[in-house]
Length: 161
Length: 156
Image (cartoon, rainbow over all chains, first blue to last red; front, top):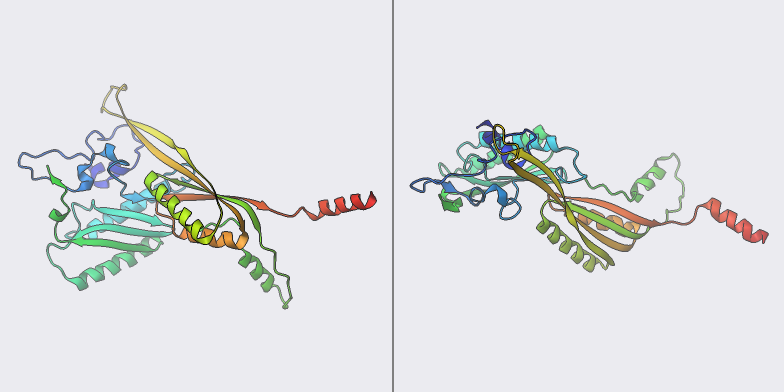
């Protein structure tokens, strides 16, 4: 359960011998088909690189370019936890639809947020600016947000299972 | 990340300017490159393919002669996990990381063209793609050898 929260078992290579990898990234079907699946969730982990792409993009996992792998992992976790904590009502499906890109020194956080409860534009803009400033100061790198707002989670549904 | 290993002419000229009284210095001659090889590495082959089309169009627009394009087989890094919680070493889950490599060569450039070209390309590199630059530079022979050969011809 802890590993699922950290999302470490979904994207990175684990150095421990056994994690719940048979079950990670897979969603069980429900009797009434109530489980909403986005495209990301619907594709199984063995489809990564085929139907599915990564949620973080950086060069530190490439052969002969690996200098700062743990730094990237730590930064990703900080960003994801911060987004989930700062936008508790706005995040879609527990913060899974967030993509982190790194171009040079700049970190770009892209993804989906929902505005189901209230749609106060000024508040959202303020939060945007706060997140960018806060994360830039915390991570010591320019951080940009490129989020897309969606009315509710149902707009992102690929199928129901 | 914009590591241009070709030597910055601007840096050299500022070093000259910093030293005391104003001197009339001769500008350094531009470097000449026989070829510059770019090696791109990434996890997604489609991303690398689109980046190579971008490079080809840039070379076409800027009239830079293209060399060869090599798509090398990917390099695998494998680490397994055991499928079961206890015992059953025979059954594992196979995890691997693939690094796709593409080499792109560009021929016959001057130093200033090369630095502009590389600057433009590196500013537009997609996320998750790493680049390494290697070059073959043409240089005149060192003075010691030139003087020595001159002396030899004079002696003959």
